[in-house]
Amino acid sequence: MLCNLCPRNCNAERTDKIGNGFCKSTLTPRVARIAPHFWEEPCISGTMGSGAVFFSGCHLKCVFCQNYEISALNNGREITPSELAENYKRLEEQGVHNINLVSACHFIPAVIESFEIYKPRIPIVYNSSGYEKAETLKMLDGLVDIYLPDFKYSDNNLATEYSFAPDYCRTAQSAIDEMIRQVGNPVINADGIMQKGVIVRHLILPNHTKNSIGVLDILKERYDGKILVSLMGQYIPHGRADRFEKLSRKITKREYKKVADYLLELELDGFMQELTSADEKYIPNWDFDNNTKL
Image (cartoon, rainbow, N blue to C red):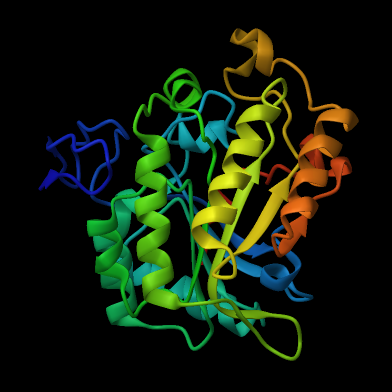
């Protein structure tokens, strides 16, 4: 396979043994954790958790990624589509509210194959950096119920510096357009659990409230009434963030309040994360041997 699944358009050779693209992934999915996850938005995690499948590797590789050990270093174990399908069943039997595919873009063909083996009866969540090709997302039309993309940057200079993606802003908008086309406006059931729709997340970065305000302006102008917005204050220096002076600390209460107040001023519907979430205890335990067993 010559891979062009993501916006990098590497056209790189990928086989079951070879991964020459930006993400360095082979065709065989690699996962770091499969378990109920309780730290998503309330309408995703609910009381029983979200059935999260954390895929290893990433085509964005943000320097501050809190999942750096799996996104950049590709730690995890290989898993077949049939094993993925069995894990969906196992999670479903545990009573989770949904199956949550975290950073699955580079393994979409295998994910589709897994759904051909077994399609869960609960909603499917596609949890993404937002840096996606609309053309690739169309492969998931009819399979995904809920899209959970990030919108990280309104400033492409920051996207270039921190995520090596100078076309991030335009690309993310095109991706969200396609997500909304597929699943429509948010639908939440009587128990407060999301069934369909799009939640767009934005992580506030230290020293970059202007970028966050720009993101909120875009979301208001382009998607008002069509999405829910999740404002995240969980940033902690991780990955290679210590090499970047402006990223070397948590966000301040003043920075958080400035962006949160603007979200309220714009009357964007959604969620605001507490600053207490900026703690390493909320980073999943990457116990690769025990967290990916059937």
